[in-house]
Amino acid sequence: MKIVKYFLSSLAGLLLLISLLFGRLNKSVDSLKDKYAQAPSAFVSVEGVEVHYRDEGNPEDSLPIVLIHGTGASLHTFEDWAQELKKEHRVLRMDLPAFGLTGPFPDRDYSIDHYVAFLEAFLLAKNIDRCILGGNSLGGSIAWRFALDRPDRVDKLILIDAAGYPRKTESEPIAFTIARIPILNKILTFITPRFVVKSSVENVYADKSKVTKELIDRYYDLTLRAGNRQAFVDRMQVDTNDNPVEQISNIKQPTLILWGAEDALITTESAYRFQEDLPNDTLVILEQVGHVPMEESPGESLQPVLDFLR
Image (cartoon, rainbow, N blue to C red; front, side, top):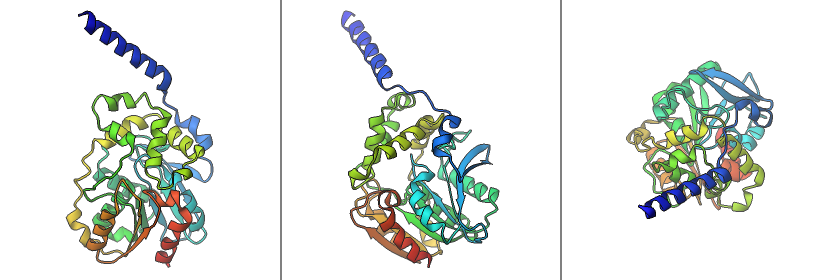
């Protein structure tokens, strides 16, 4: 009994110490807006959620480009692309529910079906009938599902290291792993060390030297947005193998498949499966680039997109 009491008291002391060192309070949306929601940022109510978005470029463009980020990211991941694309196009991007400044879904349903319905509601709120749709990782999965389910709403498709197929992961961000482990994932919602975020971002880059302090600050600050940590855990509980991949061959829109050759989270095996299944595609593999080409190597990754759009 003395040993058990000593162990429990030591464990309690350790947890208290960890909480003091790494425990972080949630940050309110208002406290983050000055830094991350400067113009042209705006908010629109969609399904009871105040969605953070940016709408740039030619407002008369009848076929806007809509870009969707991946898990743990935000609309800022497409910043460099947007600055170039808006010179000739109308470009929209949003923080998906669970991420960025948008915050969680009230019903905590983070299935792809719900995200597809959310995207349709967002486009309706912005009076967009048809668009060119692009997405990275989770955003790519949402994009191709939307094109499959609402083909009349999508003119062209851009899949950037897109999720969907059962994947063989060579290396996964530590935050993803922790979020799936019972008990530990509960702790993650209030004890969130900055080094966990830093390690997770470095994991999806091929060139770690490009992971700057400013980049980590942004990911970390938006992780602490009120509700996002629990939403991240909720999202990671969703079965990622429930997509109807056998129907991908029914997607008829011209599709650009853009992939980082060094992507260890969703390897190029998925890129080649998209190429095999899609009837009208262009495949571009970017050497020495990881899972987020538009962020890690924006100039190199944008050129195939410009060629595809033209």
